[in-house]
Length: 427
Image (tube, rainbow, N blue to C red; front, side):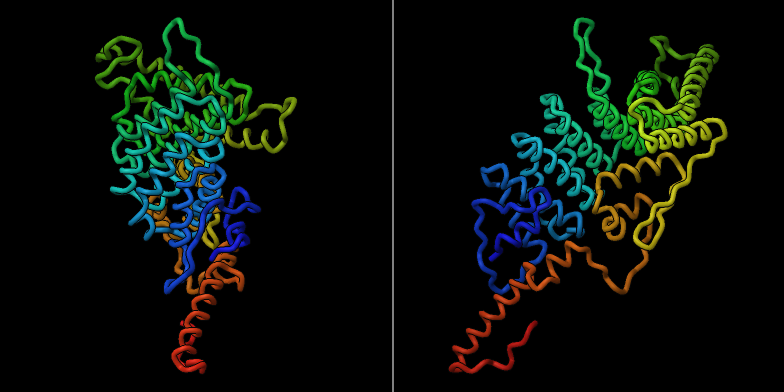
């Protein structure tokens, strides 16, 4: 049996609460492990009480952050996915946020392949509908992050990424009729849209992109550099740096249209002038931002971050030098040398948060993404959560072991007339 202390220790969102109306049966011949815990959390997602589902989702996230659950994914990913989608449709803002994060972790753990494709196919429509039906900022941010991650993992074709990118773009830059006035999204939503959009752009073959979409995107990103919010400016700057790195500016025309006119050989000079004009304008804007003086309400740390970021972008635009970064993964370093790699790393690091190091060490999908091969450690360093769950004398596992051994001893004594069976030892 799991007592209230065990359940409380496994809850991320509400450490002092326990699951309501969930009864766990005694352990028979199988010791409690992570997968059986996940089964219990999965059962709790069917409960009517929202707080019960929230606690179950929080605990599921805790397990997925601290271990790579390939066995659970193999047999029960679809059940967890559909319960999470139900939470997105009917849950509180907190439940929606937890469900979105759980789906993202589910996809990252599954890795590229059939299961990740199914997660994407089953989730795109519910997420899109949820984005259209809510004005709650926290829900929008969670949905955008989830959509970005599941598309990054499960979207094998450019059209999959473009579909998700268009859903995102419509949130920050909606295309409406002349008689319709769109509500302005908050800065946090705009910066998240641009960051998620850039994250997916790193996966796209630029030759397959719609040139008209590029033109609109570049113009919009340029206007964002003038916004008051620093996070919006930085997100826009990184997106523009990525576009220049991909060489997409030089591929505006092809055989499509620009400004309503079919591109033909004679239009080359006009196209070049337009592209150079955009590049010069963006470069001048970012030079100003790299030297911006502090204003009211701005912290020194944020200002320095902005200056450094735009200094790197200007250096790249003028000299072609992409920033190089090194991120510590345990005792190892993960290096990036392009805007594309840096954007991918920053997004996934932010999404995984406390589970980032664990996944970088043990998740094959991330090893492939970053071409990262962790050292094989002879000694396994368990996290604090794992030690609490499996090593502590009061842990779920040790209580289950004690219960099982006591039962075995009782049976043995009955068989041997009250004498303890020497052959029964801890397995």
